[in-house]
Image (cartoon, rainbow, N blue to C red; front, side, top):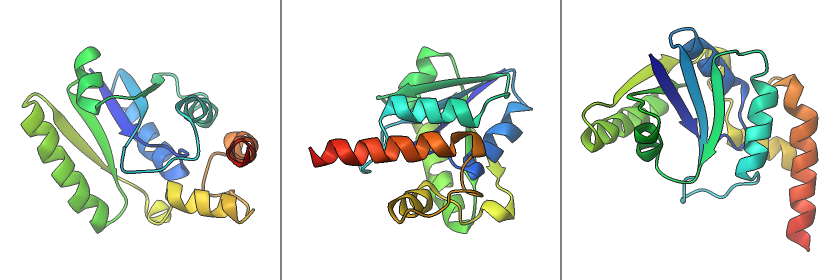
Length: 165
């Protein structure tokens, strides 16, 4: 059986990676897909996110990394997926994720959401925190994969410079 993990992954964090690695042990193939949320502003392009995800998930054999500009439900239909994995860091996440799961089920009754609790050490790790640290020039160790730090910092600088032009 296959499943999907979605997120904005702007960028992918150690908390995301932990959830993905846990989920990958339960499924034959796990699609990890960066999506666009029109309510959010991003600092990385979808292609950059995919590259960061590849670096971060290196060695996780059954993971398919992708990016998609449409709805998660559409992607799921295209790939015949019915299981969606959602990570829970804290009680706020839990409330939000339960509402999202209800919406997914209402959209398609065959969709099942599997919740995976993040390790407590990741309860405050978020992409927003990583972006803040990037903006302040602070060290990203402990927040993102060591394999991806240099790429994240370089892409961030490139993106800042291109916005100035």
